[in-house]
Structure formats: C-alpha cells, structure tokens
Image: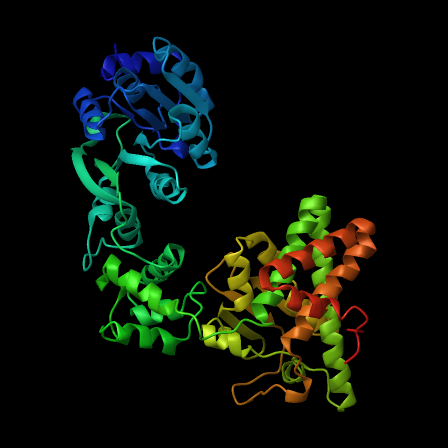
Length: 520
C-alpha cells in the first residue's frame, strides 16, 4: 500500500537515511495524496501500461504508479537515493530502478525491452532547471510515447500552452504544440512539497498527436527558424533570422519569403502561428538559389574532421597536434602574404597585412546570408574588432564541435599574422564558440577610420585552393607526428569529405598533393 504521500512517513524515511537534498538535482518531494492521485488519473495509467518515471526521488509517486500500472521503469540520477528506493519499493515486483541521467538513457531500448516497442507513458516530477531538455529530448528522440504527464514550474506550464501574441509565447510553446496537445490538469502550491520550492507548480499533460498538426518539409529546419526568431524577441522576424548563424539565407531572401506570406516586413516572430512557421520554413527551404562548391564552410569541415579523428585516436596529444597543425597552416598563409608584400616593396605592417589577405566571402556564402559580420570598436592605439557571425563558426556549430571551434579559431588568425610578421601582436581573447561575439585585437596597429582598405584582387585565392591547402597542411603535420597512423587519419578525413560533398570535390583536393603551399 502506497504510504509516502503522507508527510510523516516521508520525513521518517528521509531522517532514517540521513538524506541530504541536493540543489543541483532540483529535489522537491511530493507530500500530498490528492495531487498524487490526480497525476495518476490524468495520465490515464492502467494495468496495460508501461510507465517511465523520471526522477522517482524516494519512491513516492513510484508506489502509486506500481499499484496502477503493469510495469514501471524509474530512472534516478542521484545514487544516494538508490538504497532508499530499495526499501520503499521492496513490496513491488513490477518496478525497475535505473541509476542514470535520463538524458543519457536509451529510452527506445526501454520501450522495446519492457513494452515490446509499444507506446509508453511518461510521468515525472521534473527538476525545474532541466524541464525543457528532458521534454524536448523525449519528443525528438522518436520514442513511442502515448502521453507525458509532468509536474513543472507553473510559468513553464503556462508557456507550453500559449499562442501567438502573448509575452509567454515562444520556442517552447511551438515545440510542445508541434508534438502534443498540452493541458494543465492541476495547479500545485509550494506547501505540497518537502522542501518547499520558491515558486508554484503545475501538472501538465502532453498528449502526443496521432497526426502532426502541420505539415512541414523539414521539421529540424523549421525549429532552427523558430529558435532564431525568439533569440532576439525585440527584433523583427527579418532581422532575427538574418542575425542567426543557423539561418543560411540573405536578408533579401528572408524579406521576400515574409512578403510572399502576406506579412508586413516589420512582423515579429511572436506574431506567427505554428502553421505560419511551417510555411516560412518550406518557402526558405526551396531549392535552387545556392549551388554548393568549395567555400568557407567546406573549408571548416576539413579542420573539424581532423579534430575529431585526431582526438579520437590520440586524446590530448591529438588535440595538441591539431592546434599545431592549425598554426602550421596559418603560418604558411601569412608567409605567402609577406612574400607578395615584400615583392611589391611594402612594409610588413598590419595595414599591409589587411591589403594582402587571401580570401573574401564566396558567392555561395553571401547567397546563404552566412557571411562574416563584424564592427570596429577601437582604432588606436590598438585595433579591435567584434565579429558577430562567420561561416567557420556556423559550420563548427552545425557539426556540434564547439571544442574544435575553440581550438581552431583561438589560434588561426594569430598564426597567419605571426607568419606574416612575428613582431605584430594579434590577440583573440574570446571567440563566437563560447561568447556572443569574437574579439580580435591587434596591438599598436596604426589604423584609423580614414583608412579605406581593399584586398588586392591578384592576391586572392579561391576556396578550392584554401580547402586543399588546409587538408594537406594537416596531413603533413599528422604524418610527421603520428606516422602511418597519421596517414590513416588523413585518409579518413578525405573519405568524410567525399561523403559530405561528393567524390569529385574530394578528388580535386587530393590532386593538390604536390603543391608547394609555402610559396606565393
């Protein structure tokens, strides 16, 4: 018989095991039998059901679930609660406890093992700090789910239900409503918990749609647009999308899509319904504008893949080799620039460095709206740039390789400059990978607002060359440090490149094997 809904029994078991609540796990145990019964009834738990419980705590709700369901699988992250659960659930033979972080658990495997792959029900008293990742993880994983009935912070439950035009309407509202029908079934005051939380709670049931409420060609693409629309709520939809590194379209294409939907140019994301976001996603995703060739993002892909394979094979040594390879590559670029400048009789100043740069954004990247965006915050004595977007950051982010981006962007530009003239001090105190903008500072640069610097066209290299140079610079370093294993890594990177961009582009890069990248 379930006993832990009684506050006295709950306190006794906590004291018996001298359990200490941990803030990092957001632990608040329910002590109200009416709320517990309401959760069970709202979830519609029957003897035919397999229920996944997230965060059982001391087993309060688990006891109620075990008495109403055929099977309960309870996932608890706190190892200190496992002995307690061993006692409080000893009378139930239909409960399995797993000591793990729910975000690391294969829920599909649970559904397959305990419910023959049929839809499960999810019940939880969720920690407020991790509500959104858990709920979205459940929906996006493709796990067969009937419904999710959870206790969450009241304002979070309200946001899940909101529609367009409300201040609480946002990316969470749209994501939840895309996957499920939300309904708040109970409001729960703080005195229903031990310890008492500082805010009110609510039980919300999310009933999975049998058919999606809107049709969209690419849901992942739609949610990128949704996130970008609400990241800067006060900006217009057009500007919010244009400012996002996740959205690869020009401002003109974004505006044309908005106007095609019959919306004003000044519309904000909070005014669009789920159906309108689906329509916008499909319009922007229409093919035909950009033909992918060698560009900045294919260039970043090479570095990213070298980082992956080098660190997988050699750990910290691999990371050190990757950074060394990036510096080697950057140094070669800088020396080429210096050779041309000296040939032309130019001093090796930072101004000359800017004029002899070897690249500009490609047409593909400009058409995607993914080009570099920066502003100058200081000219003298030190020259400081804030970079708000760049295609290299966008590619590392797309691939989920933040650490690779930090290692690459933290040393590349300084290495190019050092190859050009070691006496110029080029600092990169922060990058886009861990901040809202990248900062690059050149000490005593001798720059001024009056200088209008254009790169010399004859010095520009196309990105076929830059892709090949990047590949072969890393290949040279890999082989020098790791021998035959380094050669194998380079072969893997080229295979990854072929799989992503086609064998023809990979073969072109391979064809540069005899090129001397040290000479301008």
